[in-house]
Each structure stands twice: as C-alpha cells, then as structure tokens.
Length: 165
Image 1 (cartoon, helix red, strand yellow):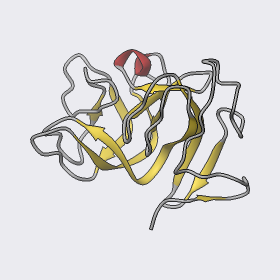
Image 2 (tube, one colour; image 1 turned 30 degrees about the vertical axis):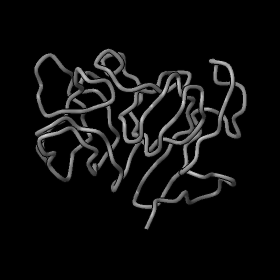
Image 3 (cartoon, rainbow, N blue to C red; image 1 turned 60 degrees about the horizontal axis):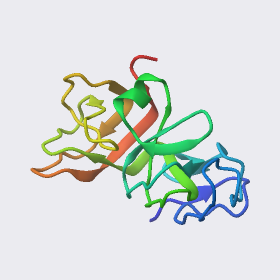
Image 4 (cartoon, rainbow, N blue to C red; image 1 turned 90 degrees about the vertical axis):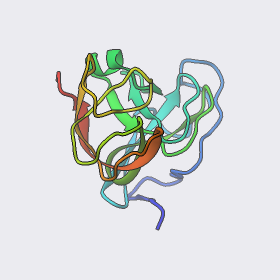
C-alpha cells in the first residue's frame, strides 16, 4: 500500500511536486514551507522548496528556510533537518519529503550494510556505512544491504539528525 497523508490537512498529495518560480520559496506553493503532516507507516512529511534538482530517493538537507538540497557533510554539521525525497524535484519545485517513519527509501552507496550506523558521504544525497571523515546520522538505519552498486534501499528513520547535535 502506498504511503498516504493522514490527519487534518486538506489537499496534501505526497506523490507530486508543484512547479514554482523564483528561488526564495515564496511563489507557487499551496502550503506554508515547513508544514508537517503525518502519513501512514508512522511517517512524517515536510513541505519544502527545492534549491536545485533532487533525484528520487536522495537524502536531503533542509535549511532554516525549508530549502532542500542533496545532503552533504557540511549541511549535517550545520544542523540542517534531514529528509528523504520519495519523488524527484526539479529546481524550484515545491513538494513533500519524508522526515521520519518506516518503509521510506533513501540512497546508499555500494556495499552499504544493513542495521549499522550510517554517515554522510562524499556523494551528495547518499548515505554510507563508511565513517572516514564523515558525519554520523543518528536515527537512520537501512533494513536491507546494498549490492555492488549504489541504490535506494528501505530505511527506518526516527528523528534523523547529525550526531554532532
């Protein structure tokens, strides 16, 4: 069963983006940026503005203005929100990213193990189990291993945040 929004916010569709104009996130959106809604499978979702193109299942950093970009170590170290794009966003699109729950997907690098700590990586928008010079992301675990090429895997996310916070 696909994940759906539940609760009292009308008009939420977690499976589409809305095109926007400008780069400041104040044009074309149907919801205030940063709005959160509950979804099935214990998920929570945040309404964001894409600060650039985001591919499906990339792990994203979300700044204080609710601008989302593929997650980097610097974003994690600065305490940005962490989310998981379940759909692709074009630059300036508005839409919903998962910020918590089960049965969500996120990109992990090749040979990433299941049920271990995950870290940012040198590949923006992807997590890995290698800790070298990277920041640990608490509250996220892969429930399946990644093979010999990078892939999107099912995750459980419980209040994901950089271990430095």
